[in-house]
Image 1: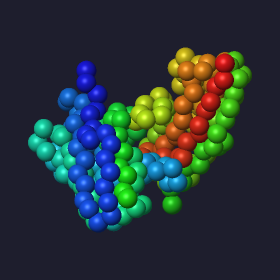
Image 2: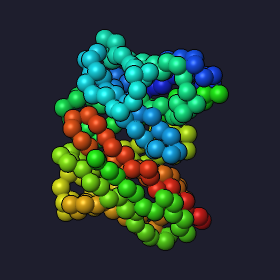
Image 3: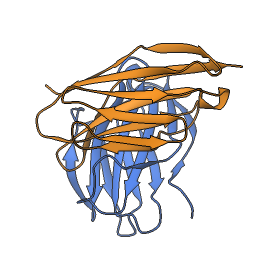
Image 4: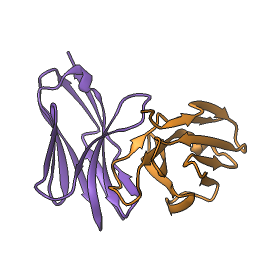
Length: 115
Length: 109
């Protein structure tokens, strides 16, 4: 059974640019969450999507956005990149939203470097 | 504000030297406490879920326990392959996890 797939794995951008990251959840999983991981702040919740609707959002500025498609694949976008956006962006999926919130399957992440 | 604090930040053990990692939390409306393992360059891998004080879960050399204010991850006779960062998280609401910053464990042969 294929795991959560994130693309691209690595990318380098400059300040002011925008970036789109993609996530394909495990087959049959309908909930997709995104997390940002940095050495200073650790893992922080960005948002969760279920059935193409954003169900919850973390404390991040509006430059961070996302969407989910009918096949449960998800994308997140960061506009007007800042140096502080350099991080590992992790996508996680689970089968049903009503299940335990913490039993997530994570992808390997997209490592974003902003210069 | 929900908070999760893990200690120590880093721990170095000799192979076979047992120890414990701590996760203390303050959260309203706890919906479970979760332990993950993260290897370098990888995403976190789910280990355990604990829901109520007194609950214990075991997996190989790992045992997780929960009290009303903290959780412990006990590592018995660790091996080098147990080296990783161990993350603790609390569930808040239906979909949000608040993570601690992790304990980086290094087990030397």
